[in-house]
Length: 386
Image 1 (spheres, rainbow, N blue to C red):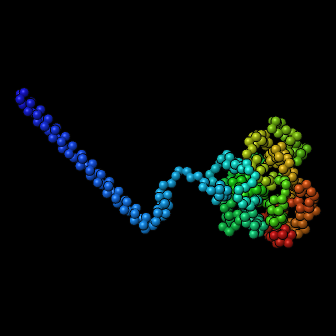
Image 2 (image 1 turned 120 degrees about the horizontal axis):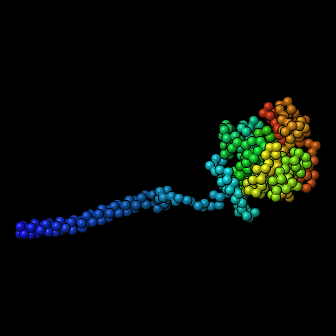
Image 3 (image 1 turned 90 degrees about the vertical axis):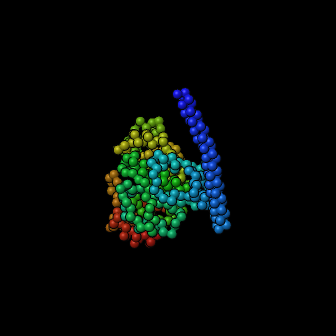
C-alpha cells in the first residue's frame, strides 16, 4: 500500500513538473509573438505617416489631428471674440442669468478697437408690428448704426421675411401686464439683451403704436450729441403722483424722492446697465407699488432721480396727446392723419436741449392705429423727411 502511494505521489510530482516546464516554454513564445505584432503595427503606422506627410505635407496633418481631439473648453483667442455681438437673439438664459451676464461693464472708458456707437430700438409689443413698413423706411440706408429688439407675447410667432430689418429680432419673452412689475421686467429684459452688444450706446423704448417723426439722421444726431438721457422724473402732487407712494418703501425711497414719468424713454449705456444691475429698488417697487400704483410710471424715474439726477433731461422724446382724458392717451387712425396734424407734432414747441432752448422736442409719437399706416407712408417723405 505504501509502495503504491509512493508511486502515485511520484507520478503526480513528475506531472506537475512537466506542466510547469511546458508553461515556462509557452510564456516566452507568447511574449515574443506580442512584441513582433506590436513592432509590425509600429512599422506600418510609421510607413503610413511618412506617406501622408509626403502626399499632403506636415501642415495639413495638424488640422486633422486638431479636429480629432478637442478640449472641453476653448478660451477666446482674440478680442473680437469678446466684442462680437451675439449671432442670434435666441438663448436659454433665465432673467437672473441674463441680467448677470449683461451687467458686465468695462472699467476703462476708451475702447481698444474701432467702435461705431449704435442706437438700440426696443419694441415692447403684444404681437404684430402693424406700422413696420414705416419703420422699415426710417431705417433704410443706415445699417450699422442701429440694432432692433422685439419683446412680445411668448405665444406670438412673427412672420417677417428675411429681407426685413425685423426678421429674427425677437428676444425670449414673457407675459407683461400693464401697470404691473412684469411690464418693467420686460423692459429690463430688452435692455439686458441689447447690452450684450457692446456697440449699443443708446437705448430707446417704443411700442407697436409708436412712429418716428424725424428722419434717422436727425434722430441719431440728436441723441448722440445730447449730454443727457431722456426720461421724465416729475414730482407730481395729488392722488396720481405722491398719492401713490407707500411709506413702506422708506428708507430706500422717501416721499420727497418719489417721481413719475412716461414709460417711453431713451437712456445711455450707463443708465441701462444700472437698471439691469439694480437689486436695491426693485424689491421695494415690486412689493409696494401695485395698482392703483402703476409701477412702470414710477420705478425708473424714481431710481434715476435718486441715483443719477444729473444725467437725465427730465422729459420724454415721445409725443402723446392726453387732451381726451382717461387712463390712456388718444389713439389716431386713418382719418386723423393729415399734414396739419403731423406739423402740430413737429412745430410750435420749445424745450431744453443741452441746457439751451431748442425747437426740436420730439423724435417719436404715439398712439397710432394700424389704419394710420397708409396716410403716414404717403405724407412721411414730405413732412417727416423719410
